[in-house]
Image (cartoon, rainbow, N blue to C red):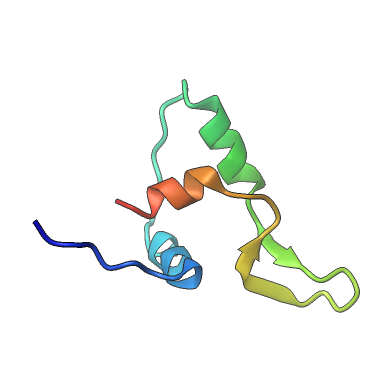
Length: 67
């Protein structure tokens, strides 16, 4: 048994963005809702986008990074 390499949130995000398509069952309504609402956090004053932070706590996105 070997330990897996832990990636940073930015590395996990880049890994997920490489997928052309993510397929979810229609019965996974919370997963679909969360993925549709997920965006990078944005500074309201400067409109700067933080690529290592999200607008919500993305439990689904975090779980998907293990695949």
